[in-house]
Length: 161
Image (cartoon, rainbow, N blue to C red; front, top):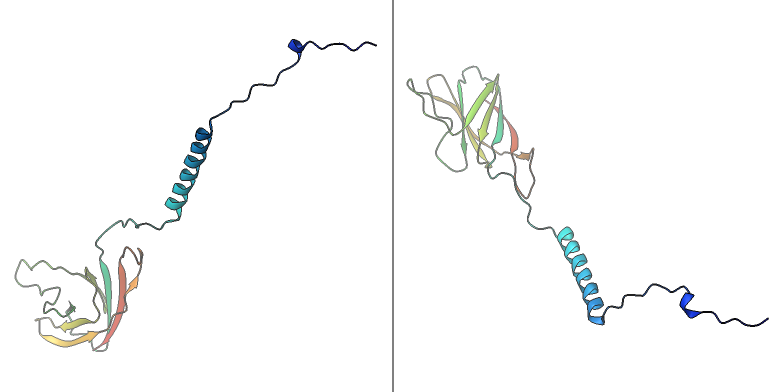
């Protein structure tokens, strides 16, 4: 048998490969690496935490024990100030209080906007005369929020009259 010449025109050809210049390939690798680095840095860096609010109301509960029958008002003084809150109701239009209070039996609740330790407490009778006065250490406990952003806190103190 005779060897046949294969016609080169009918032979299957491979698709032609795209050849990029060296600088184009290098540029693609560098851009890809920068994207990966940017993603890693943005995900792994702590960054500043966005805090939802700037002011919180704190709750102080004071539980009275002992002879509490004469107590009609309880006032709180935060820090070293001389202002007792809430002020005594005098006249038909009592002054506005910066501290909201509520009472449930012998438990008094104060809504404060600044927490201090210690806190001054003063028990008053119906006429506004001081029955007893003390200063108590307060153990504030965060109930919501975070250490970084702050948040409302609560404390409970007992006072035996």
